[in-house]
Structure formats: structure tokens, C-alpha cells
Image 1 (tube, rainbow, N blue to C red):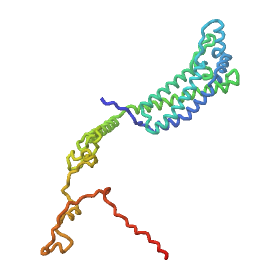
Image 2: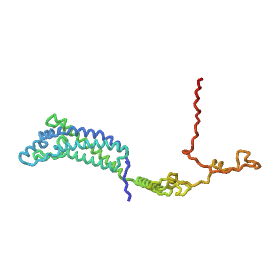
Image 3: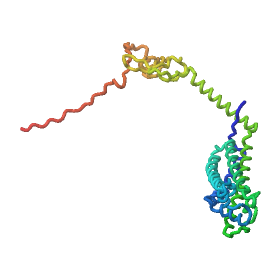
Image 4: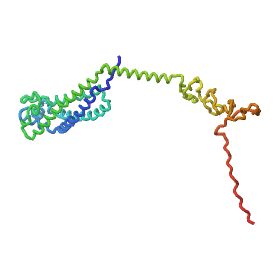
Length: 330
């Protein structure tokens, strides 16, 4: 059974445009979570809701500690929720900066994209759940649903200075819902690209078959007898076999008298025109006297031609005239 790893996005441009639309939303999320960090308005909204009788009061922890009773701060008013929102805001911006160029280079493969989009979507769902959590710590003022700044208008605030903070908290919750929807759309599109069609499967199998044939062809060339295999010996060299000659013609260099010579090459029956002129192989000549059969030509004793190496050829001596003699004074 073949394993197919999808590498192409069926909706490449749509995914790219969704990432572009994601940029302003993530910037807004990062801005709002940055403003809310370090308890900018969390305790103020908590106290404002207690003054209106919507939820518990922030000093409930002091009364519980004075009476030796256990107390747990509700998630909606805890510092953990504020820090959690800030972390995922920074994380979403970082992921967008990374996945946009990676997707542009066609390296953001669908399985990887599905994992990333699904993970960040789950993180934002948890954030929305924290922001809409209840506060049942005070039996006299129970809050069974989301906090008052989400379910009610900000104009009901007991202190008018908290209206701006109420609007920021309400906006953060609304932007969180929007970005969850955007991540959900991106997740569905990427998951759709993870399922390979029959045409894509056949194309992948064809590419694998071509790679296998190329690999076998390379191995066949390397194992062919036309190539002398490389050995660790010092006197062996990697020389390809000349067409028309047996493999033993390309052997290692031969040493005679301490001098390293080239590998042995078989003699060829084809002679060059210069060799034919020197050896008298030509029957006709451009000189008319040599074609006259009545004229006797002296028989010259053929001598073997000795090849002189360019290094041992003596150079012609240069002539320098003697210097002029000085005229003798009488």
C-alpha cells in the first residue's frame, strides 16, 4: 500500500487571500490583548459589576481568607485569562508572519497547515470560553452566564470612567469570535486539500516510477564494464573504455626504469598522410621525375625514425659576433 503525502493546495490563491485578510484581525487582537494585560481594567470591571449587583466583589478573597475558607478566583476575573489572551495574540501574529512566505514558496503543505490552523483555532475557542465564563463565587450575586460587559450595554456602568474599558473588553470578545470563524474557514479549506484525488494519485505514482527508472539507469551505468571501477591502489586510475577496444586496453600506468608512462594503447592500422610520405607508402608523387620508370633511382637505405621528445631536443645555439677590437694607438 502506497503512502501519499499531499503537497499541493487545491485552493492556493484563496488560502493566500485569507491570510491577507487575517493580518488586520490579528493586529487588532494583539493590540487589545496588549492593552488589557497587567490588569488594566479587569479589576475595575469586576468592581463595577459588584457595585451594580451583577457579580461578586474583588474583596471576596479577603473575607474568605479572614474566615479561613477556601476561595478560587473566577476565571473571568483571573490574571491567567489576561496573560493567556496576550500569549495567543502574539502567537497568532508570529504564525502569520511565518506561514505567509512559506505558503508563497509552496512549502506550506496541507497536513502541516491543517495542524497549525486547527491548533490556533482551538486556542482561540478556549479564550472565548474563558471570556464568557460565569461567576458563581458569591451566592448572593450569582452570574450564571457571560459577564455584564458582554451581555449588557456599557452605558449601565456604575462609573462612567469604565465605559471605555467596557467597550475594549466587548471588542476583544467580538474580534475573538471573528478570528475563530476565519481560522475555521482556513482549516476546512486546508483539510479539503489533504484528501488526494485519483488524478493526483496517478501523477504521484508516475513521478515515483520515473525516479525509480532514473535511479536504476544510474546504477546500471556505474556497474557497467565500460567503466573501470575505482580501487584504493595507488597505481589504479578511473579511465573509461575506448569504444572498439577491450576493457584491458585502459589499464593503470606502466613503469619502465623508474619512469611513469601512459597506459598501453593498441596500434591502429590507419596511418596518417605524414607517415605514408615518410614510409614511401604512396605510389604516386607530385614530382614528375619519380614517375619515370626508365630513370634509375638510387636505393636509399631506410632508417627508423626516432621520435625525439620535446624536452630532450637540443636547441639551436645562438651566434653572437665578437666585440670590436679597439684600434691601437701609434
